[in-house]
Length: 439
Image (tube, rainbow, N blue to C red; front, side):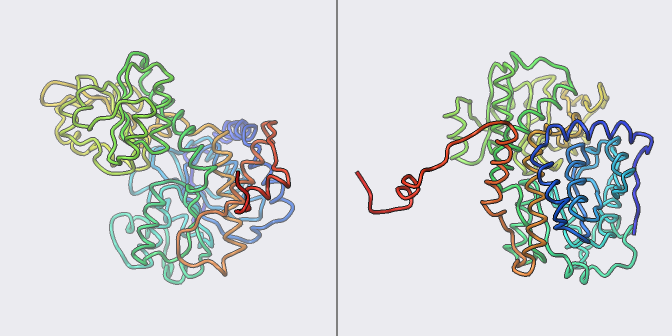
């Protein structure tokens, strides 16, 4: 099995302090860790994860280890690893194969390293680990598979997949991939869609990405948002959060582009302008994509933009902005600041691309605040436990974490924040559960 590989083991002390700071703001996960330490629900479990290696992920990894799991961490994006955190985890004996700035080969080497762990449970953020496992089991070959195989030796992946109890998925993009596999009957083991838990997508996507996306944009550019025209493509929970924070930062106008009539109407009723991207291209100063789909901002759209337009992506994969077309057609490319590249177009106009078109909150900043990841990773920890306890009853399908666990996470978070809520009286319970009572 492949052992840890990080950029600089000497960063471990700094990484430990970052993890300590995160733990101060993740009380729910620490409460789960206390129970895991006592009960050891994951005893002997081999668990491989493809997650952003951040200080918050480190708190999750420590919690899983406290529950008895043997954990192997690989990244879920080539640019999102926090090298000091990776070093700290490796120093603690948690297997980590990740560093910031991986190329494609190194990234899929890391995925292969995680598979060499022969996991019984997989944790994903975007689906790359689970999808690569499925491709190997189904003898589908491409560059990613070739690179993964460099780390896996002669593993029989058909047999490996049969021994996997289940997996989890953190983000909308990954859940969509797994639901497509379920429809096509190609999903080989059960997946819990952590992203579908209310305490994940209502908070992580809206409040976490809403704030951290702007953190990434501001670190990369140091521009003033007040007075700017901001265009947000997509009005799901992520887009809602980004648009709301743009307004809070003083944007002169916030324009939403959408393909879904219901979401477009909601954006209008929330007080935002809504128009097609072809028209918004001529209006915007800052463009942020949050759709999970490809070429949302095409090269043709970019040609309509103002001189100096800024482009960023908050979706999981770097497909929402047509970066390849920009690279092919630009007559000049200059890195002006870390994670900000200026492209001069044949027309003479320039556009600025942030974070290579990858998710800007993790490339140019630190990802979500710890308080939000407390909820998301509490879901991941409880989903892992649920898979172990219920593996004999789960089929190859996409599941939602049971609502009672979702509610328990919210209850623990409120308790940690010192906030109390009301409880129904017996009379009220009877009233809302009966059909005969009326006016």
